[in-house]
Length: 101
Image 1: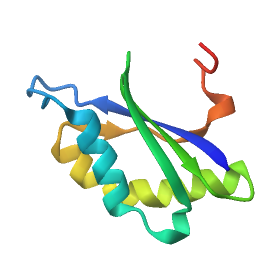
Image 2: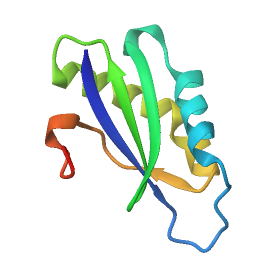
Image 3: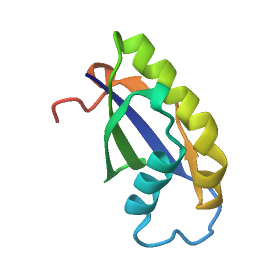
Image 4: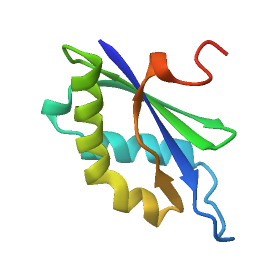
């Protein structure tokens, strides 16, 4: 099992952000996941930059996990943008700047 962290940054415009967006993003990620992504669990939480999704992925390596998550993000990018957020590139959890904080 690998852990991949993805940040969702609000658009820089002044458009209102929907309340309860965390569960909605969680559901969007699951709705667009395909079995090949190996997605096992998703947790969405607020962070300073916007929102963070921590994805637990079944993969042989961190690189394979990130590749699978990037494919998932390609499918879900437009629906997430429609809710006022941009997707930042995923990274393995051990490379997170706030890991352990």
